[in-house]
Amino acid sequence: MEIKVKSIRFDANEKLHEFIEKKVSKLSKASGSAGTAEVVLKVVKPETSKNKSTGVRLSLPNGELFAEKTCDTFEEGVDLCVDALQRQLAKYKEKQRGY
Image 1 (cartoon, rainbow, N blue to C red):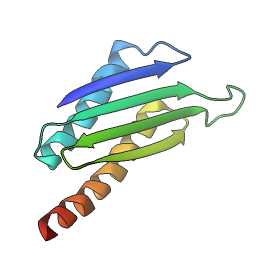
Image 2: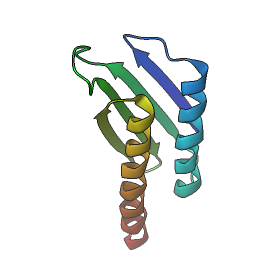
Image 3: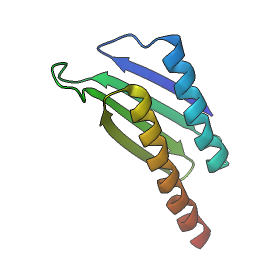
Image 4: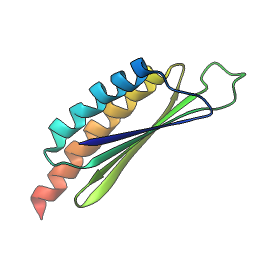
């Protein structure tokens, strides 16, 4: 699976990139098909504590799944997005079996 990481309004370090690739690669194992994942990281309103927005878009052969979370850290946001996408992926696979 190809994983693209975009960071808006800051520069993501290598450690964060490795963390994202490790977590998002779990989705490729669950999906069973090679697609692409696009991770968008951005800092919103720096004066608040929960100012890190994380969005993950997973492109699949017959559709697209998306999750977005705003948290204290990007790592927490990626974790929550991957969890949400795993649930969406289970529903997606169930629908595909019905066709």
